[in-house]
Image (tube, rainbow, N blue to C red; front, side, top):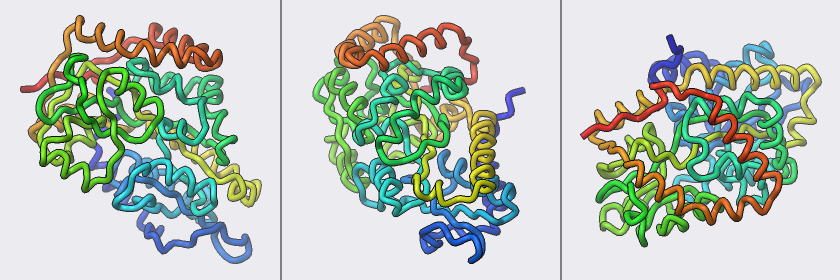
Length: 360
């Protein structure tokens, strides 16, 4: 039986496990001296609470590091570190880690292409990584995952691991965005990313990066046609929406990064503790995150709708983004990674629990 369980259960368990560690924004901001008490590191995220998928992973890391170090290293989460009303929220976390305003950060891989990192482009290519099973295979292929994270050093951070979260879809407020024609000149909220935005423009849409209040206003006045998200997060959208369950743009994969100076300041023993915790964290996330099927059912139970795109619609969507692939192919390394991922995709069988079933 697959060991993944319901999200809420783990939020409660992790909250109890992390009770001994303060989790507020007033936690110490820098690594403490070894003789002045426990080493403390702040980890920032754009997520607003520990019940989000990324938040649950962070709380597990807090536990693993605290237990592994015997309390000598304490990690303090900073929720919504980029601000409550923010655009480029992921990029702000990345820059805060680079500038040592945060010791560590949880940053989606898609966000790094605005910071000069090109090594994640194959991972986020449109309609390529379309299942948790494939994402899991990619991040556990040590040579491929190392290649993907290789660009982070140039952005001023050190990559620790990759943590898949969930497949991403487009959720339409007036109707499902299933056909290429459905995207024509439609405004769609998209987390800031050069590649993601290029994908939506290739489909004919108008991607925008908005604050939460501007997004809600756009939904209310009808100017916002849709949003790019995952089923778990889409349960909190400001209006009912419809998604095509078999149209998967890509998989959201989070990068866990640390400031190089903070990492260097750790003792050898504490670096070993962190490395072990990070390895254990990836294994835990892969085993315990909720499935696409379960997330889709929860979305439907709260009033969402899921439809299925036809084979002809899928073919048309794939054809529409070929200019994006032509641009990606100009970089030989990216093209080689795309081919590697295509080969991996052919080698796996997607389990039923990775599929989002339609609901009226």
